[in-house]
Image (cartoon, rainbow, N blue to C red):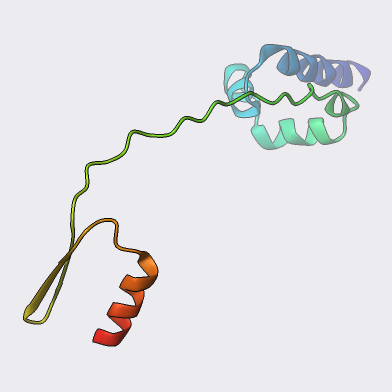
Length: 98
């Protein structure tokens, strides 16, 4: 029984050091993923998770799109509006047309 426990702990430590996902590690070592999760829950190794690190992300504005008109079509009518048409005005227009 002690050998079995040591084997499980060795697998859990090897998994942590491997950088693999649980599923990948289980596939490589022919271990049932549900069994592995049970080992992880019952282990002190589970508490030794690597720290979470945050990445710095730089966001830049996208290039403006060319001004293309907005085309609306209904039963027997077509409406072409500039893309700069305010959404609130468009909502009022559509509400009045229906």
